[in-house]
Amino acid sequence: MKKMIISFVAGAMFATAGTAAATSVIERVTASVRTDYSVELYGQKVTLINASLAYNGSSYFPVIEISELLGKKVGFDSGVIKIKLLEERVHQVHL
Image 1 (cartoon, helix red, strand yellow):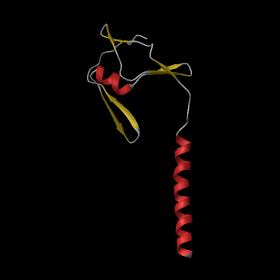
Image 2 (spheres, rainbow, N blue to C red; image 1 turned 90 degrees about the vertical axis):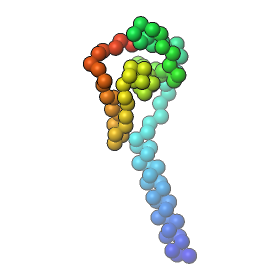
Image 3 (tube, rainbow, N blue to C red; image 1 turned 135 degrees about the vertical axis):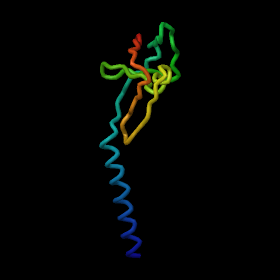
Image 4 (cartoon, rainbow, N blue to C red; image 1 turned 30 degrees about the vertical axis):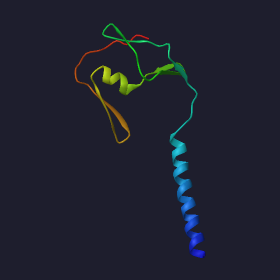
């Protein structure tokens, strides 16, 4: 019985330590979904599958979806987002 209680307490400590670590990284925010934003690529209007967001004076667009439209590759490496450029051109996105 004593071993079972010790195991339970150790498991509970391990579970809450993981939860506490996760809460220090994740912060909930309230953002506005902006379906009224339009995106143009090479002079053509593009319809995004995922909506854009507006939060705290900034606009956020789905990076993977836009990078695919631009012919770019997006990858995750050790928690870092990397966008690999296939060409050295600057593209203007209209809001």
